[in-house]
Image (cartoon, rainbow, N blue to C red; front, side, top):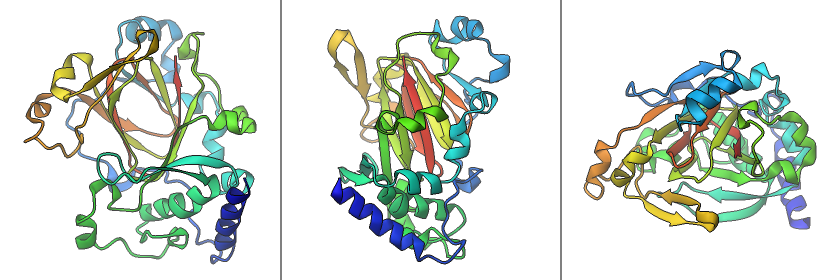
Length: 313
């Protein structure tokens, strides 16, 4: 705890000395030029106020059909939308809390996980990530400011794609709402869980370029986007053979799997059948919920600094 407080104090001191108005606290409100070209195989979507729980159950949950639910968090007035639109309150109120931080991008330059203060993650990675959205150079807490220059294209082209804009860091699948109970007041369990037993909700907070590698889970999933933007792909269970998957069985016969394929830049010499795998895709925006049926393969990449929470049930 003392180490966490010490590192958080250092980050706080550095930001306190930054010129007024030049710290990029706010998360991007648009996805900018980072959206990949979509193929047209777009996921089905609907507005939350047009979707009853009965319709969700009969048309999607019961048949395992993915769905993008637009605007639910806004319709339900989640306080999290306002709280996490800027990182300033989180930094000052909870910056000393130790959280697991994954450094680097999986399948590319992963450097392992470290226990770090939340304030360190914000100052050293999230603020610089915010800064890249307005065309600033990344490289440290002070880089999260307006008025800089974009990364050199020639230098960036030699980096892994996910890390071309800034160094990647991710607090992924962490029970932050249990660690910091006051944050629970900012959230609500989506009605689409239909009263079923829930696993503890997970928070996901990371830089632009964070990747959740292609995998499947044994539970239905509601992924709620609080701030920032993510690109996603989903592959149905009948595509498993084309994904070169490793299937694992957990307790209670739960089945889940992982794929070694780097989805957006696959090595087709090593994984030729992957090029024939059918998928649907889309963009997850603040206020949206993505329903991922159990056993559906899914991949996500953050287009901006991003905050999400998910509910497995």
